[in-house]
Picture 1 (cartoon, one colour):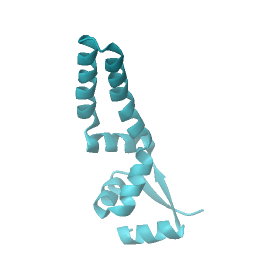
Picture 2 (cartoon, rainbow, N blue to C red):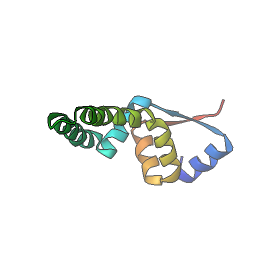
Picture 3 (cartoon, rainbow, N blue to C red):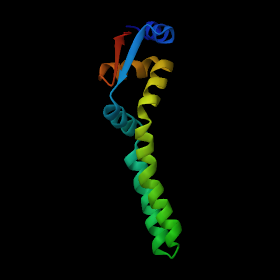
Picture 4 (cartoon, rainbow, N blue to C red):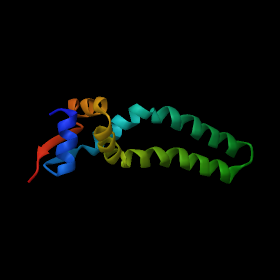
Length: 105
């Protein structure tokens, strides 16, 4: 199914879309480089805690740990939105079976 057919069929309700949440989370994590973003944020939180800003440091550490998990949790919606908007991403996520197009019930 081409991207244009996918967009038309999805908006008309002719198809059902299934997204694997775990694979979508891994895809989005790799695409956004979340581990490489999380490491400096947690490191800055540790540095703040060590220089005396304990509560601020702990808050930054918590943010560095929780934010990527929240991003991964909403990955399915993000993947669907991006697949509807961008043909290249549609090809990637359907090619790796993150997004599966099924006939409507």
